[in-house]
Length: 488
Image (cartoon, rainbow, N blue to C red):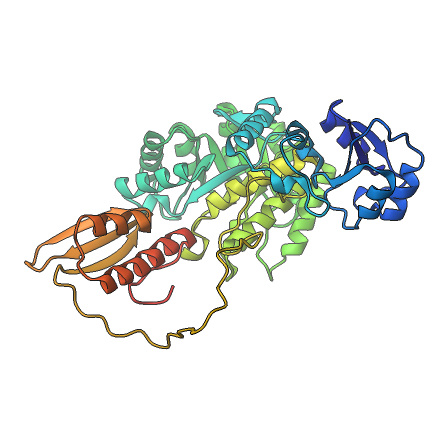
């Protein structure tokens, strides 16, 4: 029989996740992680432990309870850090040897299919403020990621389709077309037609020009960015008649935003998304976050638009952690749409990062936990835990290599390596002047093919090729440039 000991604040959620699979008792402390040997000893003295053969403590307690275990004659082990992992631990309680020092969740392997299923169930049960095609917006639905194609009207058909396909594959929920200032009505019609033919996702139009907004309405745009106090008077009734969702923003603060939203509702616009405008770092970011917070205090229903690209594009730092942090801030503010343009090399991958960030925050919110130990993460350059490899043997002599010797040319030809469009390309220049191209996504696959097909004849050439292919794959994973024979 199993007994779970928790604190006063966590009792209800532990009870919810335990669902009768174990007995629960509450120690005389608010926060379960602060249970000490003294508190535990005093609590156990009050209990009849005769029917229990295992006691589970919260996984994040840090004291040594071995003496208490001996004193009371019952095994004391650490459970998971978070209550949401209790069902998985309890289901495998007879299969896993739990530890006095390592949380039980460390012994559980995250199942991507189960995580995907949990997210799908959460979304299916959610009640949105409204729908854009099949995409839920607002309410208690998940934050959606909008990917902007910057200056879409400057792209030809193939370029635009390629961008749309890229963002669709990256997991975006809405494709937004950024319209140039000098674009024409015909340009708007063209980019909407091309984009809608390339994806089943909703396509939005990003312009404040009334004529172009009307062209977007007539050409099937599913969302309009953006209305303000000026252009709403010209096209607001057209949007209301078409019953289109619209983002409403303000250039001069919340008073103007509330006033414009009020006017929009008065003329029949029902599907509103408010944009208090997220400012860049150094230009009022803290104040703008306060505006979002104040908006949500006053209006708890209207979906919010969060332009994270305003921060990432104007900050010389890797976008991964920034996007994760702002997805978390968005969750706390009740944001509905996370916006990213990927307008520069340094922000490439932002859409995928925000999609993952949104899923992390969705799970954390549902599980009432921090966004950690969820089974999904945004680690790329760093890792959560050190993995131990084969230990270095303590033997002599140790050969210390200072400089690699010069390598001779391989009589079977030489290779030039490049990365493009998520692939590694290897140009094999043969001795007779012919050239062949070998491509793949993984260094080991390409290296194995080259070696097994007899395209190299020298061991040092194979070693060199393996190093360069590994660098190329690393460049792909980290979204960095690759130049053969240079450091990444």
